[in-house]
Image 1 (cartoon, rainbow, N blue to C red):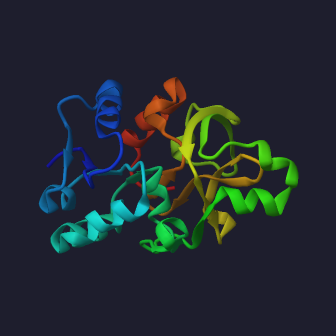
Image 2: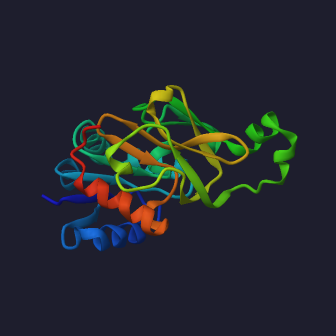
Length: 217
């Protein structure tokens, strides 16, 4: 049984996530895997992702054993979602012409451009994708914020953002012309829109906190 299993769905910078976990203390007990049994038995599960959510979800659904193992494991034990690993936890995404998510946290994933236009015409100068460093407001206490200052800067790369239906699930918020969910949590799930593996010391601290987290808020 591996302590940390990074799910391989064919997208995302898997090696960067792997190296970040090794660096903070998981060396020798971190694995990248699409093996259903390895995923099912993971002590800590990581759902990384980068690119298009349609590709990510299609890979998940192509293998019924893999899908069953991921959904089963999401119900118990600590889970960290990164980027698409956050967006996929929600009900629906506008990306790829509309894509159903896992429905584990209520809300929708929307494109920045129409939201910017609706909010304020002056947002037209903001480039999409949103790429770079943004401050994250910690809206609620959570074990994964341990030793991370409120309004710390994290690294983002995304064109779509989470519009959570339940404010109680939004543990971190950022702003890019509009406020958006930077981190969401529910029970044993914690997921970030930003990339902790690219966020220097603050990101490494979050990963370290996840390694020590027992899955209880």
